[in-house]
Length: 119
Image (cartoon, rainbow, N blue to C red; front, side):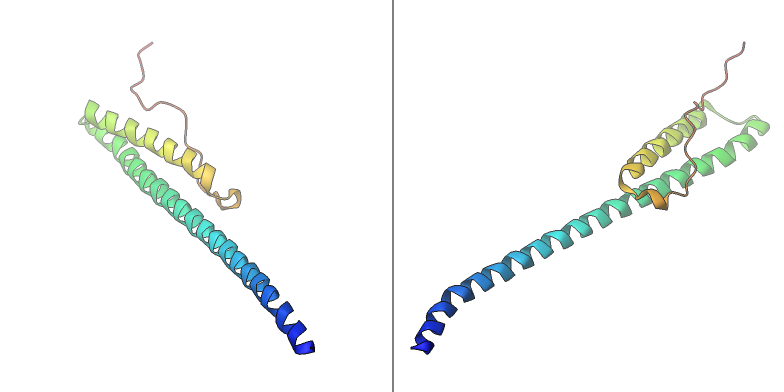
């Protein structure tokens, strides 16, 4: 008799336990997928801001020498302005993704890199 009662109670409880374990496993898988997605977003943000920073820095370092030598063109000026805007955009994107404690980058200037006008 006891065996029959245990058998009858065991079948529904086995289904409940199995359902609980499956639900828990799916929740863990969703959480892990979320962590992987966030990691991919952070990595993309780090890569983009690093690339934009290097490009902007290279153009900015080259500009004074080319100005001094008198060979700085409007095309180079436009490229510098575009690199500056790209850096600002990547910085803003990274601010939304990167945890605040990891920021070590200087904030981009909001100044324009266009030619000063004569007063």
